[in-house]
Length: 459
Image 1 (cartoon, rainbow, N blue to C red):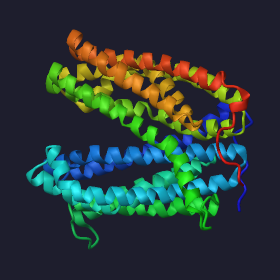
Image 2: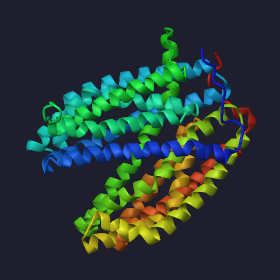
Image 3: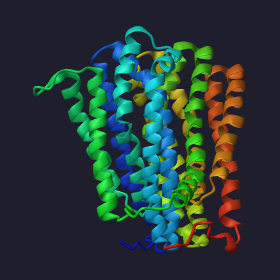
Image 4: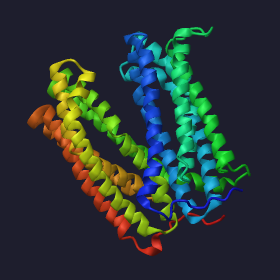
């Protein structure tokens, strides 16, 4: 059995964090390329296929949140076990995470195939759009294994500090999808044109190759696949540890898109189509700007998890301090960047003066909350990594449900679109203050006898 020594429990913290962040930036760029590729080539087929793709996004987002939550749960347990030197638990968790994904895939696929028609009718799809949605999702559900399993394997690798191999897998998937999409959609090299079905086949095939690659890395490089037959009790306990973090993480990851849905509805009622278009375009520009924020949050899982598992609470506390300082630097850079680039970026997405003005307004207001949002995100990820999912869920529920959404209704009544965006920014500031309190309570004031949690020590 390959023995893993914790690699992140000593050494310069900032240097280690940044070295883990850069590969994740490449991974996020790969994800963006993947999504843009699908949307671009399907859009070349016309409005109906593009609308059909639009109907699939919310469903895929919900399933993706579940998969992401399970992945975070597995990564949290593995990184803490690595900090403890518990090699058996690392292998058991990685393997049982894969088994859990297989179980969930079966559940998702069967449920999805039998509910396609009523679900998408309920969402408003009808006629040709409904037929295209069902064509796409039938293939997607059958290939769900290739989409839900790799994130768990990737998260297991990242938990050990290996960020490069997940990056390689994501870039390979993105490039393969870029090559296969036009071949399968429009028909080249003796392959018949399959339309929107071709987009689904390209997704599943590229993801299948990525799945084989990431499982190979997990077994042959990391040695984290356990082939010995476990007791059912051991599997249940392993799934329980994963889901202890995974279920709250999956649920809280749905809160930002839910909040965006509410903001979109408020924008439509207060500013019409121009406000909705500005909100959508502003969000897309913001997603590019937030790549560093999201990549750094991925790096926090192995850093916090390994040090927490090893009982290095001084380093965990310093990671929180670094997160605070780095969020302030990042926020300042975003403000400066968007003061000069907001208008040029807005004109990429619209030629209408009213829409451009609203996009610029959105970007300049939310820029002032970039530091708050990043700090809240990083503390949230650190709480999950250290095995405190309820604190993370409480933070997200407070920020989005109890603060941002009510403030947005109030802002819409007072100042329309401007009030909505100001409420979003203010809510993120309030959420950051809550996150700061949670961070101090968990990471600074915890007593030494609680450094190591209830992870079994059978190695």
